[in-house]
Image 1 (cartoon, rainbow, N blue to C red):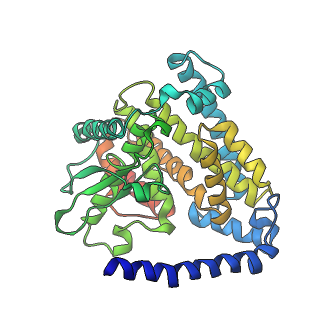
Image 2: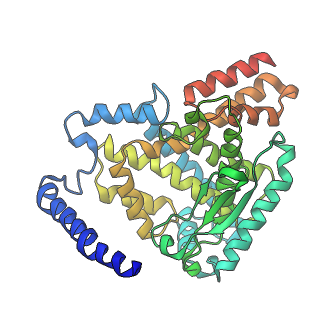
Length: 367
């Protein structure tokens, strides 16, 4: 039977291959690996130059690692003030470190069941759909649905991710991780829903799919255009607050918590790869400035070690979008139409930040 054949393939081919791969890592690569106190590429020949190039590619030309590091430090400091302010309102705590500890450790801020997670995400998506006409053009796009990640995949999956609409009218899907709900922070999932579905990635990527006059790489997400794609996702987390979409003051902690992760990324990515930080120093900085659990701290830091520069794209992309909106509002005054501004951001597919700036500048001039 097929099941026996599959087991034989795993036993005779897959497992031996994995064993050979692990042996190769241990015997051939590990002896030459850098120690934990030198995880950054600045410790290898040409690494500093290569990292500077990576930062410029993932963000925008001319942006240096030193500037990215400074931006991260300033963003973290500003967020600590926001944590203190919201902590005083919701938790009766105004010390930023104590607020982060409470968000990380208070068991009452966890879910009781997978059904609670799904209901919260569905409710957030429904509110966003109803509010969208005041903030966006009416686009002829596929719907978005919420689905639970399969338990087999969930063990190693992120909190959530988005899958664009498929052929034949298949909807876009906001996949959410509901495995062991008692370990998941209840305050984060609304912000995640806005980021991944509406007004975030679903609106952005489903609209892009309708732009058939554009080449495919502009209509589909691209790793080299992360700053625009993920910058939009982060922008919509704060936009959702402006739209009045968060169901409670507690849920607004999710907006701050996810912001803190992206701000810390700027500091620790440049810290390791440009300033030569150790792995432990990077982990300690993330622990001190986010509410993320220890296991996620390890995973995040190891991701930055393996993919130099990529993590800087997210917050830099959001900052550029906010900068464009501020200059458009200043230039146009009462003529500023937020729906048309948002169309300039998502109505032309994925773009490098430099091209996005030119597009917004031309639009302001046209008005």
